[in-house]
Length: 195
Image (cartoon, rainbow, N blue to C red; front, side):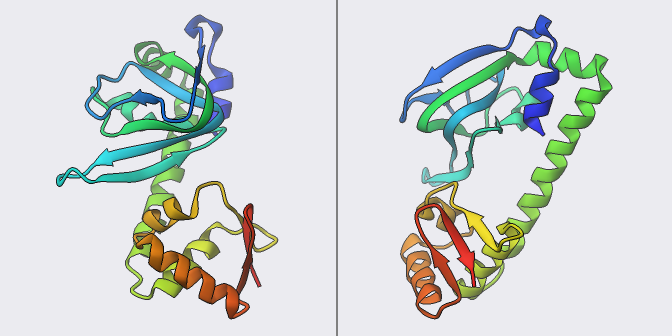
């Protein structure tokens, strides 16, 4: 959806390109918002420092996604963006994009659709985090993300996945192994398949 939105951007916005290496910081929590970024290639982690100073991974953005697009309507970033694998980004100036949204309702509709999907995804994650059983939490997350072949692509690390659903990574690995040993799923480095 964001990809389509970026394709609609008129040439007057002059989207620019940026290359970043793993470990590079695109922006820090508290920085002023100046651009909207779109990932052409690679992955970027959005990390927020909690009140106790502990970093929490909020999201791992991948190819075809925008990064911190909700910041379009904020003065400052509410998280940091750290490159997880070499990235190629496109970006447009925040002010130019806001002006475009006011004059092109079809682009605004696309952005609203993106935000709606993200709200649905966040609600699903919140429901999953309320499941007490680690096993059922993992299965629920997988069921929410499988395709028609009952497969879930591993687009983020297992450790990030554990954090996303609110489990210690040791617990997550242990329960995932139990599920695999019980014949409920099969996994490799690219995907998890429910059996």
